[in-house]
Image (tube, rainbow, N blue to C red; front, side, top):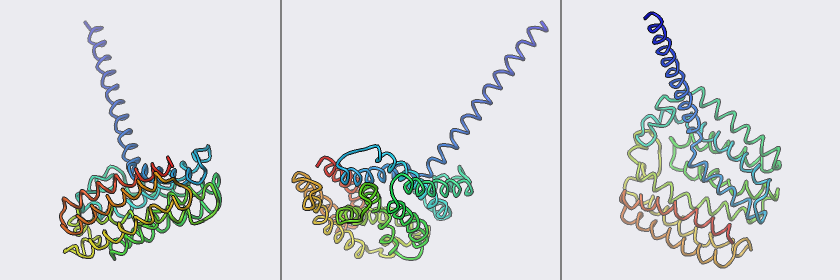
Length: 308
């Protein structure tokens, strides 16, 4: 009987030990996932895809060098996303849209986020300097500084921050192009302009949908300071309209064919239509439809550019 009791206690102890190890492993895995979430994976994927478009458009195809470029851009994008969340952790806590992010939810400590962001962004710049070229590394530095140290603090001061933020937001395809050519020419400038103009209806739609959230957090998005939506609607329309002639320019430059031209034209009219509806009706429903349209527009446009 004593032997039986000892065996049962040993089995029970082993079971508890196994459960403890599983709990520790599960907690560690959740912490890793929370740190990965700092990199804003969905936005990072879009950054990588647009950088890849710039590279392939310049190189005429994918090469091993593209993998180096994507690795550097991934590190840079992850670092920028983490640093942005570190500096905005207090405002994120005030917004329903962002209150579940790793920092406001307490899943990641601020010191960890800052360290992760600093290390990965610096590593990204260094990687691009080492495996691409000097100009690509300098553009990476410019992207990092303009987004984290200019755009991020301006968000609580002026609605013009969207214009500033559109600059680093449009840099990925330029970085991809320059990683191949080591030159800034008209072709990457056109890719930059497409990304730059596309962002305004996209972000203004987000601003309109979540304007109460932004107001609560003290972030001066244009829809917050323009509650009637007149200026917001005008900006949506002007940028969507300007995007149409800019988006067809790759055909004139010889980096895309006639099929791309017609698809870009149709997509531009499609984007303009939803921008017009959002500008005129000024409802959350139409803003959400414009946001959805923006997420359809860019991938198809760049896919056609790659195919062309």
